[in-house]
Length: 355
Image 1 (cartoon, rainbow, N blue to C red):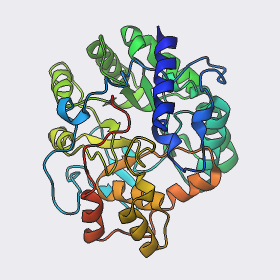
Image 2 (cartoon, rainbow, N blue to C red):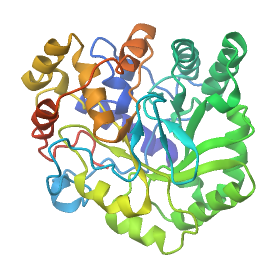
Image 3 (cartoon, one colour):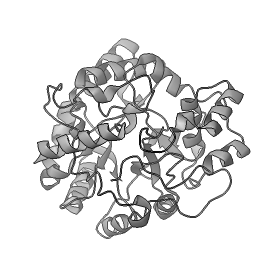
């Protein structure tokens, strides 16, 4: 069933012309061509109990859709302000997390290894993977090579991985397997990848992992208000991070307001949006291109900078070293309040992946 779900999920993403954060990192790339499960020695597929959707309007049934407008800057993250000098944010767990990094969805283990290695070389310290991506071992190899070759200490690196829904029932064992695959002594951030049966049991297993020193911070992904509230009824540890689809077309304002009292930080997957779904690609929108031209930056850099100034951690994905460097080079300019408002006004409750 897990393999069947994976095939259905990848087929949907290819039909949409998108593949999570990596397929849109740069339009000249096409990482969706590869099957991360078929080309991956770990035998995983980025498949889905993630329920890619029923064709319903995500704004009608999804409480994570755009809500009320906030201040003109768009920054709803006043609880956990970003430090642009250290390029980190202090989580409610007491640990600092980099505010921009790379995602590895749709990358084979070999591609992920090289992407992580190249990213470490230019200064990136945040890396996002997952069991279902099938590339945790590749990410681990890239980390080990980079730490050795560039003299980087383990504590300088922040690694996020996720528990897949079909493994929630054995989450305690899965924590240990994540550590083995990554070759690490602890996981910086472990997320539940999606709501599902046994997710409360899995969250409590992550809490036990924190108590045992195996995990520093825990969080959730693809959760919205009702499920967040449900989880908080049994949680002893508040989620440090929630990772959801978020970009200028779908800004998650209501969810961000909902998690603010928890001190939970929003992290964006699909930070650059998608393409091929009946709406203009964000990187080609005249608002974005004009702002990019004014700053001498690429549209992708403008989009990432918008995320950071909005209080969203961003993890664009790429297998191209030059594109990784471009996506990280966003700390030498600042969007004006008027430019932020122009991008905020693009919010139209449009999702590229309905789950």
